[in-house]
Length: 117
Figure 1 (cartoon, rainbow, N blue to C red):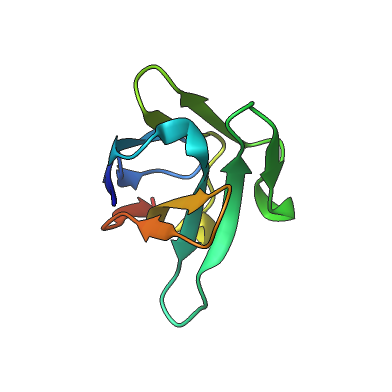
Figure 2 (cartoon, one colour; figure 1 turned 120 degrees about the horizontal axis):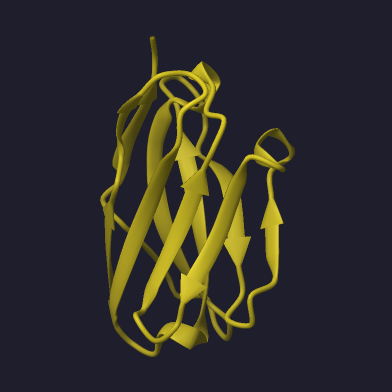
């Protein structure tokens, strides 16, 4: 089992920044791909960014150049730095851990991000 606890959400104005954190506990952190997903009201959950244990990343097109995912394997923590935020970034953001080997996957409880003036 892997437990994931997100923090860092909130309300910011358009153009602002937020940094989300996700602390993982349980099994070996480096055995998992880590990702951030988001779900806006009435929409499907989508992958925002993903990072391997070695640091390779991928992003959904809508956040490229604005968001940065990173991980600190020593702290068992993954981050999402979000800059130049737009109202359309408003969503509940979820941390995800997906096993490199096998099909195990875990989710955090979600953190609300609201972009509004």
